[in-house]
Length: 267
Picture 1 (spheres, rainbow, N blue to C red):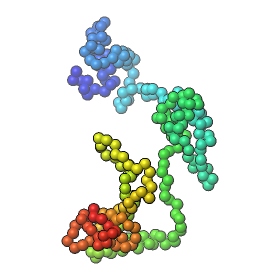
Picture 2 (picture 1 turned 30 degrees about the vertical axis):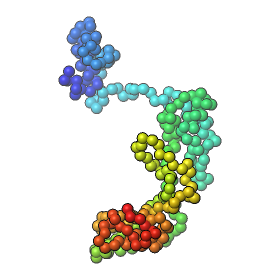
Picture 3 (picture 1 turned 180 degrees about the horizontal axis):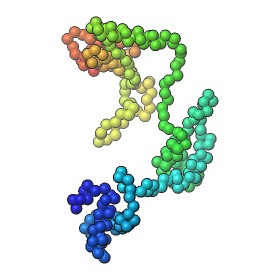
Picture 4 (picture 1 turned 90 degrees about the vertical axis):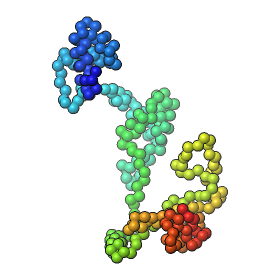
């Protein structure tokens, strides 16, 4: 029916209940044979009409409906979890609020199964971990190694020099060296490709079996909004950085080749 295309589930229940009432004794069976609706849906709609209950305009179900959460039905899971991780919690002597687990969710799930004979999903395990206040985090680099009294002044000076160079037409470059990679038959981090057969590489990434290291060096011109990459195979020295900065006249940044052949490779 065209009406049901724009109706929510509550309106649909009550509409089919009205149609069933109008068709008499076998009205429910008639509606279910004509529409993909279960008999329980029709009966629920009939009950809502008879009780004359009203809901807010933004709701189609009663508040508090639906299946209860697993942890509310089985609070003993949290108690067992605390017993499992009691001797596998590490912390900082300087801060009693900082703690972390030495067990992964998979290991905790295995202990639940082997020692307590409870088959709990990883989803529930992660819910318990979150309820206990643990969150998956990475270390944050915020602790300074040394105090610098004039750090803010240095950055303000750099910013002033950058603005002066921009106003006078002097180019401003942002230079950075990325993670070095060993050259050879090794597996790259997070590297994958669609293949018909698995690609075989060395089982260990030992530097003694590599053909050297590749140094990706990037240079970005903030004024022209352009840049290029240079890949070196020697060492990340000042000479290497200068060679990467040199661009022969008449060549595009994408085909840049440094004068120092043993240092750089074209992109």
